[in-house]
Image (cartoon, rainbow, N blue to C red; front, side, top):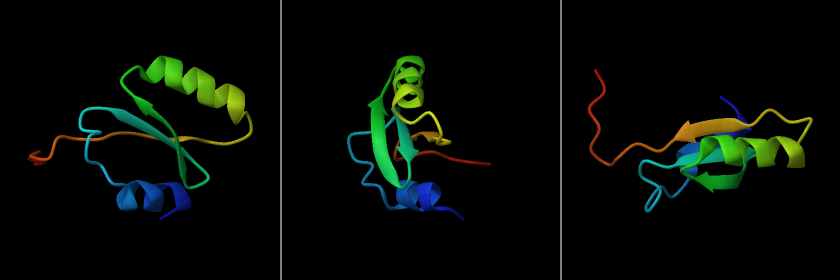
Length: 64
């Protein structure tokens, strides 16, 4: 798919359940619960990049 998506799939998600991660250029640049603050900071630090944003689901999630 892409470098950022591949980095998300390979990410060790233990301890990140129900938190957001932001990935730029294949590296996690922010993780936490307040997505607005995180995204503002990432946009300032990487103004010309498109961040990949995902919320890490709980271990037991049923997707229908």
